[in-house]
Length: 260
Image 1 (cartoon, rainbow, N blue to C red):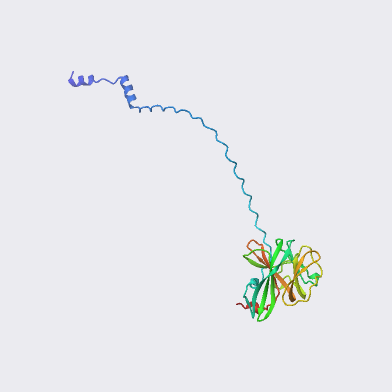
Image 2: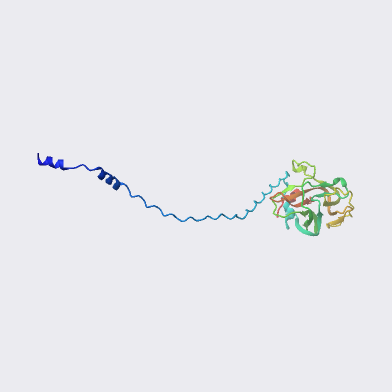
């Protein structure tokens, strides 16, 4: 037998024990066991403070009244120094106030009960400041308007003052008006309705009068000549009235077109 054959015959196959040891060496070492942590008792949570109740929802926005927009810039009647042709506006606050506990206002010719008209827009009850708009031309003075302050500015728009039970006018030719023949106009609380005939002395100058009525109300009488008079509301952004203005119609269309 050759030496090569003897060498090949001398190589022995690995035993089963050797194979098991090789497989064991090929496996990754097992991770050491984790140490057990001591158990901790969990304390129960204390009840928290009750949450605050949610605020009530905001009130719905006010329903805007369907009133006709004023065909004139009525705000000009309230501006000191405003020019209307040869006339200039002077504004004067009265020391008296107009009471209106019922939340409504009305005006009329004091000698004609049928001329009584109550305004359909409510106002907050209270004592209202009164301002006169006076048209001055040289030494002559005339009442241009009466202003009843029932709210606070700023003014968002000017609308026509409608009467209770009246439909919205379709044009400036149909404005709600009261006819005055006695030379006086009275404004008062609308709560108790028309007081009937109100006795007023003949007007002298432009001085308003405060007249107590038999039912406890007080009327404000203003010398205004004769004619048909309309009223207007100044309205804020929340549709609340700022003031009521009665235009005494002392200016012509030409005067209204002229500006200072």
